[in-house]
Image (cartoon, rainbow, N blue to C red; front, top):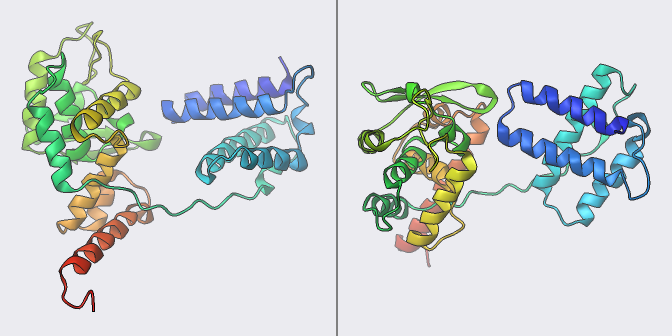
Length: 301
């Protein structure tokens, strides 16, 4: 094993012990594996960590641009490499950190595509009718009620346990990014879906406290939950591009459109920065402009 590969292994081992989510760990492992592959051409050994300096890292960055990767993807890979170099500097594998001198590509400001309240409610109501006679229809409905009704991230949803629910007061304890906890209320439809699902829930082990179970009776993974959302989106809405985060966007946008306070939405979503939540105001403004263009007599004069 080369020294660079060994350093990556030590870094990832420490990363896994921290507060990183499983999704982040998989992303960093893949990104750093690609970095190792770039510096390990066939028939040669990777250079020492101290030999991969600023010029070499700039060439690697140029390789990513040449491969046609988006700015968002490059930013993520660059973040992984910077974290690795900080780790190697702390442990003494390198004496300087050239990665901090790399320029971060500017990510485009994209307004999320959000389904309307009518589209979202049509989707959830259709799932409640169990049109496909799926074996775990109650679980599938609960997934949509919690994603849209509570604005959860898919990883937060998959990580829920039975004891995270206060069924009397209708609160959920949600573990978000960085293991930060927050409390999120849920409504009557989600409560009804939860009660119906719990009557059918069959864990493989009686000690399994996971809320959502897969076909084998173990915890449903976030990947499995994504597949369920994609299935219903494709079969009912005919839109395979709709994903779990679309429902989180819809939750925030529809609350804002109905007059909810932006800071309250920030708390419900678990955003650490208000600026992250403010992108939903852009969506609402676009909707208002569309209404104006359609309805106001001065819009077309």
